[in-house]
Amino acid sequence: MKTYNAPHDVEHKWVVIDATDVVVGRLASYVAKRLRGKHRADFTPHIDTGDFVVVINAEKAKFTGNKLADKTYYRHTGHPGGIKETTAGKILSGRFPERAIEMAVKRMMPKESPLARTQYKKLRVYAGSEHPHEAQQPEAVDFAAMNSKNVRVA
Image (spheres, rainbow, N blue to C red):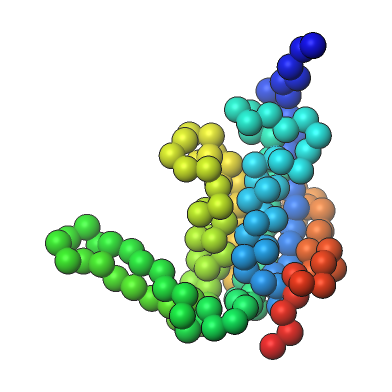
């Protein structure tokens, strides 16, 4: 029996996902899977077989339960005692709402490897409905219709 290896010249598709009223964690899980290429039959762990993913309307994404008020994100300034914290609600209503989805996806990707960094760079998240990737002819994926749990109606 022979182990199958995907070719190094894999063709990466472009995918557009609308995040309107979609649960952030479920969306992040799906996006991480597409970025890694685990949805493909020829997935190989050491080769980048993933797609380019464009997420639009990130500001309209939803959290379930009390996560808007309770979920806390931490960062460190690099100075002693420089830990800062913010909530998911502040991030979504703030200046860069796309960071909530970016952080969720990044934390679902493999850690500390050049391949993981390359795969993560194929993610583009935009707060509004406009994106500059029409020239790549991205395929629209209706993530909200895949499962009734994917959408949270406020």
